Length: 294
Length: 336
Ligand SMILES: Nc1ncnc2c1ncn2[C@@H]1O[C@H](COP(=O)(O)OP(=O)(O)OP(=O)(O)O)[C@@H](O)[C@H]1O
Ligand SMILES: [Mg+2]
Image (cartoon, rainbow over all chains, first blue to last red; front, side):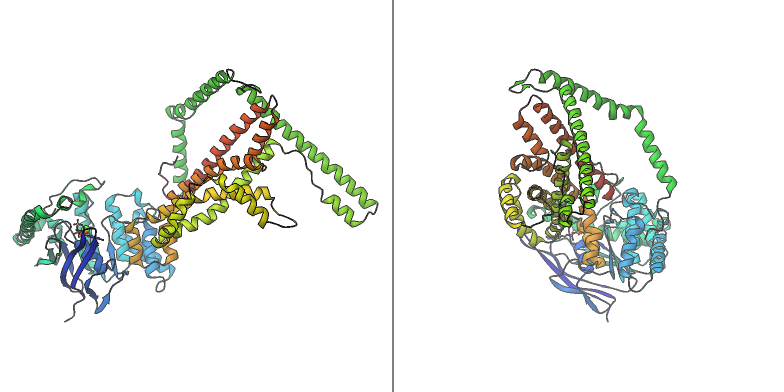
């Protein structure tokens, strides 16, 4: 049976100065329409690489990505990406950033007035209608990420790809963003692949958690089905034994991998760099949340 | 596109608060009094130092002498203008007389074509230099900006052009001057030239030195566009043109202007030297003529020119800076 999105035995090898580096080795993953999946794994294992291959920004060396029974190998607005660092054009206002995407995707199918309405609609969806004319430099990190999400949603993508979308945010803002995302997801039923380092975030948001093995030659390690009813409420879940069980499962997986990583450490030269959590270096007001992944 | 622009009242209140902060006493002190004192000190030192220096043309001019010459240069300019007006009045009278006498059309036409050929004053030379530098600079920018964008966007083209640019960049434009002069006089032959040859030679020399900083900086700016933004453009499948206009150009504008400002200031310096060397009209020629002239006033007059050159160079740079502020999206960037 064909699934909505298939990541079919994807391998990728990068040429580096020290010879070829096999980052992914036969990553296999199938998604249903409307499914919310998170990728979790240690830093540097190749999560972003998987996402970029699905987005078409990178080409797999072997295997491929099939969306609605069609192979995809170049980027397109049907697979919208929300980047870790918002990547809004700093010279365009909030409105114009989203409008740029709307104009591009719907230039033939929507009239000017419709595109205007659609831009406003998507900004309202992320509660950013009050700052239409502000520049990205004039809004907070969380707001920027909202606009980035609005821009991605406005493309009406078949698949929404998010690479640590809240990684650079402080924990309070992150909580708000997760709630917003769940609310939007409940309304729009997008198919989402999201990368995260945060165990709670993964369990709270996902239908399935894909845990990746350590690189190089990373593959899908374990898949955890999260069978919790929606809408989910973070306060209620904190007491929920099933929730805590899932949480413990993910922590256990990462911890085991972490121990393995420790064993590998002797023969890996750039281990130090990989062990550093990447998202600490941001200039956002930051209160390091409990993070076991890095 | 912009249904909602900043309402006017906010704009005004912002302006007002800017004004208020400019009037803040501490800022006022920093902005006016301190530079004023510094200039005063400089003038005192200059005047004290100058009186110690004896040259074959007399004592090195101090500020007072220079100020006096500034005024006299201005008066000479005024006098020249008066003469010019008088010349054309006389000419008109002669034409009227010739017409009344029924002289042949050819002769009248020749009279009409007569131009006033008085001595070029200091002010005329300043204007000539300004027009020359502007022409050379605009010509260079017209080539350099598109070329820089193309080079910056494509790695292959970049590696093709890079060695050539690196080789040509350090060449002093004055080394080009003889070549440019020869080429212009060989190629630019026309019975009724629109520009004089000396003007073209100077302008092209300026162009040659204005090209490189703009090309290099534009290319660096274009090549340095945030990779994430380029990925956004790939996801959106933006066309080449939209990508250039919406992403590449805005993000490379700061670097582009760095190049343009560098170009203009180098161009201005080179122009003066080229005018001196080639005896082409302009401030450089004024300086050289005064030097050759060797009267007791010459040194002071050269000093006037030196100060004018510096002041104009400063104004040109400020002009570019204001332009950058208008064009740039990052209104908060500290530009100096
Ligand atoms: N273009 C490339 N050339 C060479 N090596 C690359 C390239 N892109 C990624 N890699 C390598 O692939 C590995 C996986 O990178 P990737 O960015 O996918 O990791 P990640 O799981 O997203 O890590 P993080 O959690 O830190 O974001 C890393 O070791 C990285 O050095
Ligand atoms: Mg990553």
